[in-house]
Length: 250
Image (cartoon, rainbow, N blue to C red; front, top):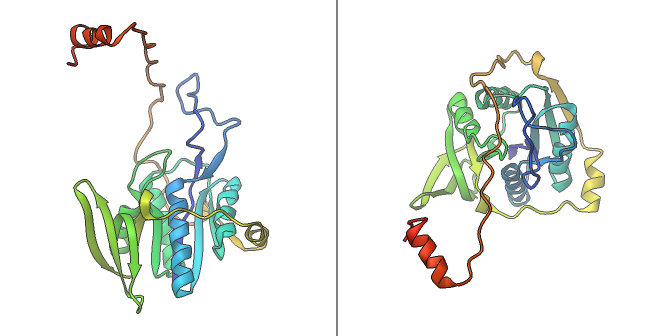
């Protein structure tokens, strides 16, 4: 079984970002980058399927040359090879889905695993658009995946507002990983060393014949208002009185 899995390069979600003075974007100087956490979960699930059914895991990243670091992270976990589409542009989900569609046409995978969303843009659109472009089934927000022995179908448990939804999809299909699908492994030292020798195919976005003009335009960025400092009260009685008389929440 061949599995295509995403590894998007995002700013470290644990680091506080600052908006540029002109509001044109965020300050990226000195910021750490890492694999999108939901993509890391997707990579882990791809590896578990490979270990159970055998096959190949191909990690795909889109971004500058430095994004090979995030692909190498997936290779160090155990993936077989990588594909990097090189671009300095900030891409819309529809463009990202178009890039993946091109790679799918070339690679012909049996399964495509993506993170349900990226923690930078939080769009949650790429998987759905890709499934539409491929004209295949999709199962988003997966918290459990079980492939049939004949590797032709997959049973997916999806997290929804009211609980869980159970669906069965024919393969190939697009499945997006939710937070509770698994706990990603740490790359071992031998895995890190092997990853340095695993191949990463580099493709210039300009050579793919894809329209990358943005469909959504960001007009400006601004930091949220600074929260007012809290106040100290001497006792519970005073606290209750302020909540009742001033905040009017009780």
